[in-house]
Image (cartoon, rainbow, N blue to C red; front, side, top):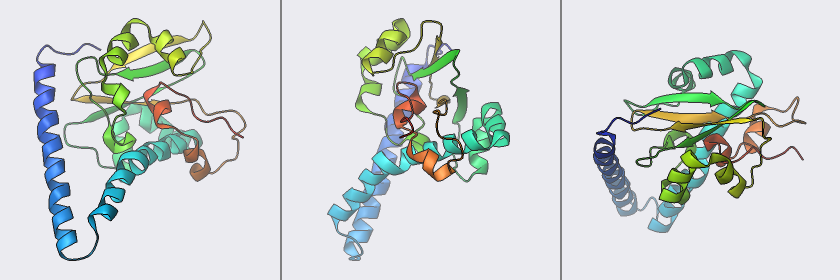
Length: 209
């Protein structure tokens, strides 16, 4: 999945305007809420942190859990992830095209953005610091098996590792394999074991207790 040559410039313009717009909205909201006495700034910080670390990744976890339990939805997700997720009420940003890729015993998928930090934050929250770091971005392409080992994921030698290069226009969501021992679990319980890293491909879901 090659980047086009102008992608880096295009994306960084897109990224900076996007961040500043988001920050402006947060500041405006913060001012209004604080002035009206509805919330104190510390409480708002807690809300923002919850979005970054809990709510974002939980959206993706719910999507994965539904795919594990609903074969029709799983097919729709793999056919057209943007359409399938929008149908659930998660509206992706205009222009974003989300592709879901499925892990199997034969293939493990991993996502990287070699030129920037493209990331489906509506599904996964904000990207972890390492996702933007050049050692991850360069090594994920050259030595994905080594990177996975660093994350504590050891795959059998006959499992192919496929690395997907995210761009400003196309993002990826990894559909991890459902752990053994979770038969009969509800979607809510399954969503609890879906980790953010398992949806990037640098981790696995938590094992069933």
